[in-house]
Length: 161
Image (cartoon, rainbow, N blue to C red):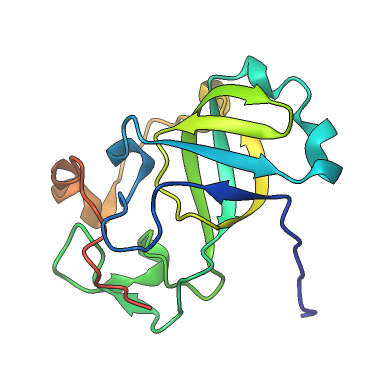
């Protein structure tokens, strides 16, 4: 297969400079505020986005390093396949996060509930639509016995660069 190349459409400006101490999911970030700067050449694409309360941010995990197809994720002590986790060290370091969109000023999105490192390149933004994005699930894998641990869980440094 041919190489796939993406170009960032923007950059995240968040209070998190290093992975350690960063919330591991946006639901654990609660009211953490940040800005997402969309590069000027893509700013016209923001039309009507302010009509949505939440957005999906796809971004490049720019400091993550792929090490193994097996990892011990944050909420467990057992090894799992990388694709059964949301661990940052992936073959293709693509992250996604659902954040609350507070407002848009020109090409700047003001968001809450962010779990993304400062300087992360943004690959895409999509509106979060509950009717499309929420599914009733019947199986939750290993996380079912561990989801209660999330709380305000932060990166503990286990995936150091």
